[in-house]
Image (cartoon, rainbow, N blue to C red; front, side):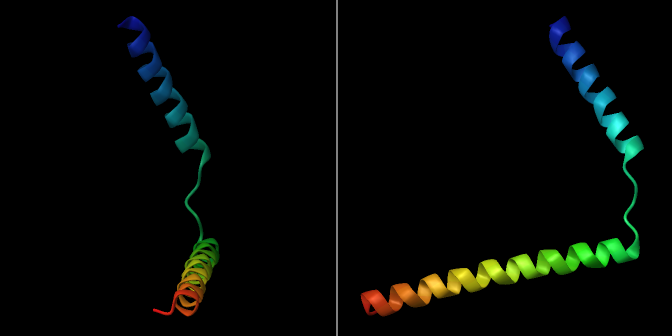
Length: 61
């Protein structure tokens, strides 16, 4: 049991260190991330639609 407590303590210590190093993104960085995410969703949707269309054409419905 002490090993588990030590692992939990280390986890929180590491998590605290990560939170201290990170920073809140600025508006420009947020917009860029939103655009990239939206583009990724669009690409995945188009690939899925193409696969569906090819499947319909090959199997006839």
